Image 1 (cartoon, rainbow, N blue to C red):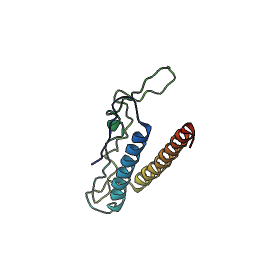
Image 2 (cartoon, helix red, strand yellow):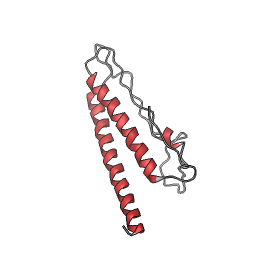
Image 3 (cartoon, helix red, strand yellow):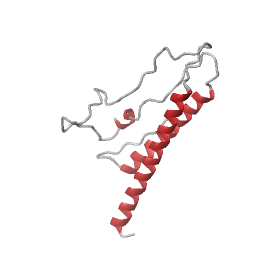
Image 4 (spheres, rainbow, N blue to C red):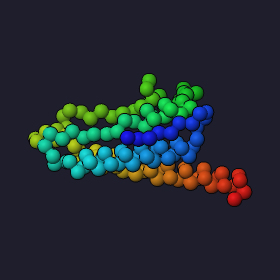
Length: 130
């Protein structure tokens, strides 16, 4: 189970980064399980709940301040629902192409979070004169 830490006011960027990395690690494990079961009859692929659900514990909200901003919907999520037609003859619904695409996306997101975490750490070290 994902352990999300909340801050009393504002957003602690380091906690947010740590939580995002923990969520990405959990998602990577679930996707690896989907790939491992690609030949299991009647296996339905799984995924973790969106990270936006974990953001509810932080003082973070998206605001559309310009009409040219993207609108993500009422719940702030943009979740792809896999069509029922993607089912093999043995009942398996795992699409290796889709799963590998998701693994690559998670990998890119992990690199982004690590880079941002490092940038903020360097910024604080510079501000503290270290």
